[in-house]
Amino acid sequence: MKQMRFGLKIGEHDLDIKMGKVVKFLEAGHKVKITLFYRGREQAHREIGFNIAKRVIEDFGDTIVVDQQPQLAGKQLNFVIRASGKKTVAYKATQEGESDAKTKDA
Image (cartoon, rainbow, N blue to C red):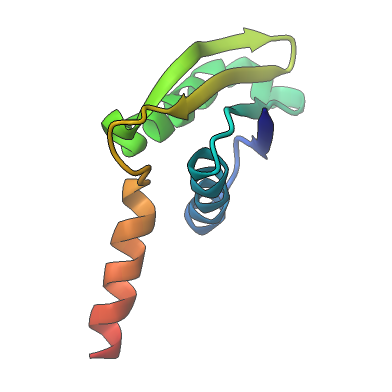
């Protein structure tokens, strides 16, 4: 099992980069535990972490299976995903970013 950690204030590009690494882990056959960590006053806005988790799961679509639903444990929100095996793993935001870069070059 591999783990990817990030905070609630993660930027769009940073999230795309980390999810690209998660795709590589999933393609290699690993399960991935994704951990969002809360710092200080972020604990008062727990819904932000759940929204990020929901977005990550939706962006992967049916290429993954959620083994453990997002659950809050202290200052961390954890969930576990694995490849579904039906299709190649793809993260929607990464693909859109690559196609945008290609159209800008043309």
